[in-house]
Image 1 (spheres, helix red, strand yellow):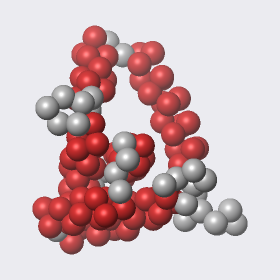
Image 2: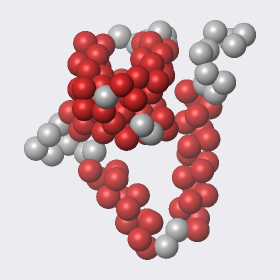
Image 3: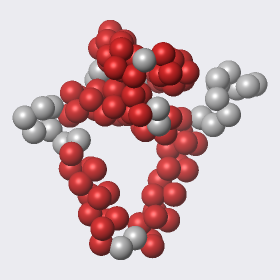
Image 4: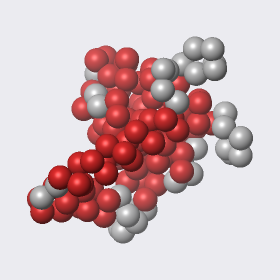
Length: 124
């Protein structure tokens, strides 16, 4: 923790690892896996709901499912889509009420990562 990070892996390291691992999956992927990856990307594009709202929905679903990788991914995407801290806090409340107290450890990590993203240079 000498670099001031709360976690062993920085967000940038996590993103780089995710990209490498996705490439490995896709290098062995059949049609079904490739279609699923494509569908995942298409689902979060703006449509009747804007991309920001869809990322908030993905974030809440990830909290309830307690998937830390998904929570971090959607936390990053929420920040990129311009979600405000107030909006993020309300989404956290929805995830907690739907998922119950078992969500709290994941909520802690999400809040810490949100603060880390907010502290980055150039962050609004």
